[in-house]
Length: 167
Image 1 (cartoon, helix red, strand yellow):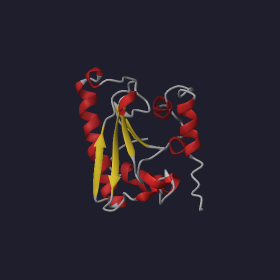
Image 2 (cartoon, rainbow, N blue to C red):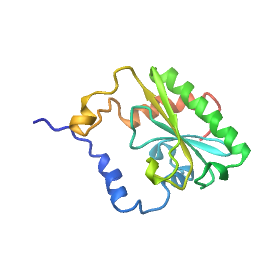
Image 3 (spheres, one colour):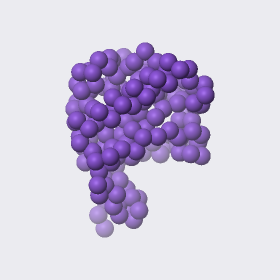
């Protein structure tokens, strides 16, 4: 038997088991003085863009509201407009930099829907490629990621900065 190591996943699993202690990671990323360490790609007036530290696929990004609010109906019109503008920017940047064949874009509302952080609204932008589903997640219980988060950050961040998305 061969082993596929993904030690970075232990932080996620431990967080789930402990109930996610330590506050909201999205708020911490929003307020960080070290954007690269937080995988923060840019900030807007009402939103910010961050890489998912536990991605479903290479290039998995999230757009979150600056306000720590969990329900769609709690978000004001200006924030709603900016969130969707940032989702479009994310899609464009990912198309240019990593060339996916498609995207899953969505919101998980509530813990039972898969929301890792149920009380801080965020939208997932997940790049997809033809053939990116295979036997590994089903039989091996593992997802193979072809690029490190740090390397991908170095590729993506200049593309966001070039669009006026500030850090």
